[in-house]
Image (cartoon, rainbow, N blue to C red; front, side, top):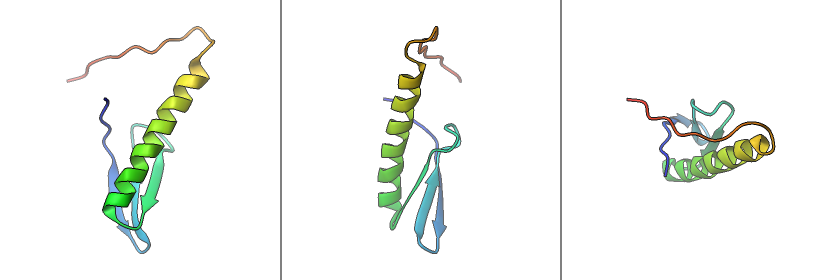
Length: 67
């Protein structure tokens, strides 16, 4: 399980949330809980799409620890 930092902002329509580590990955919700649940889905789909796009070429997924 990976962890991602997200930015949660209260707006006129509820909450918006983005993931700075994944450009273009954002979501929203009427409540904070809904926005966070929605960004979890968005992050999962973003990562799956990125992995699928990299299949077949000369790349591979490698985990690197950063302190």
